[in-house]
Amino acid sequence: MRRLFILLLVVFLPLYVFLKGVETNAFNTNFYLDSFGKHGVMDTTGKELEELEIITEGIISYLKDKTQEEGLRPYFNDEEIQHMEDVKFLFRYGFIIKYISLALFLVAIIGLLLLGESNKIAYTIFYGNLIWWIFMLILFFLTTMDFNKYFTYFHMIFFDNDLWLLDPEKDLLIQMLPEEFFIGIFNRILLFFVSILAIIQVVSYILMKKEKDSNECFDNIKRLF
Image 1 (tube, rainbow, N blue to C red):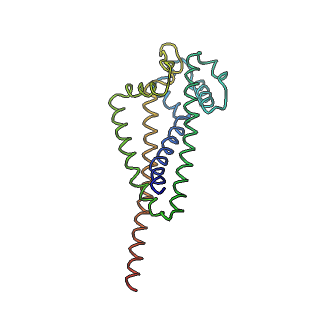
Image 2: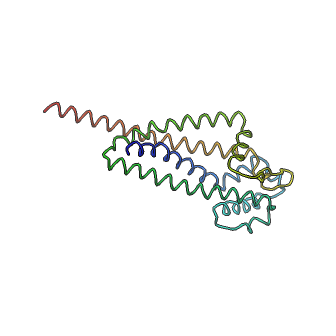
Image 3: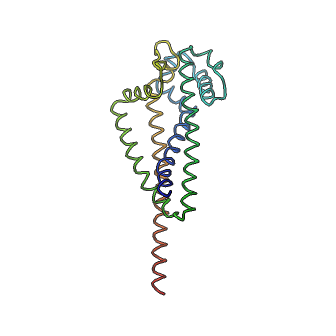
């Protein structure tokens, strides 16, 4: 049982942080607006920033499942809306996995405490997260070399149709969200992930050191008697 709890810590704490990073950045309206300015979206679409902001808020509201597709129809065609339905489906299950990850992480913490293995918590979090660092570094280098290639793989894995192959000449969605947008949001998600992971590891290291110092102090006291 102890090994199971340790495995849950190693897997589900970083997974929760990663999914939280996806949620935080995907629903950040300001990031979209900054991207529109950087990549000349107003010129490409022929729309003012104020109108693009309204459309963006509509997209985010739809992906959060707060509004229905009728709010998208004034701006997008059927293929674009169907693709956004697929994306919303991914987000819906992403939310579920995020909450399950948080629950399993808490179960692991409580389980180790009940087993009297509290000394394993900080140790497991500190060293277990190193695996995720390696994985993220590999992912970062691969996408840096050829983002389009691995972005295509992502769509082939998670979508069972080709609706994501939009036409930049006529489809507003791809005009608003070109490849540069996705490179930017991917980098922000990675930065969020590694930053939170680093903070968690620093805290874990401090707790490990305190526990080690306490044990050494306790051993020294026992030797006196």
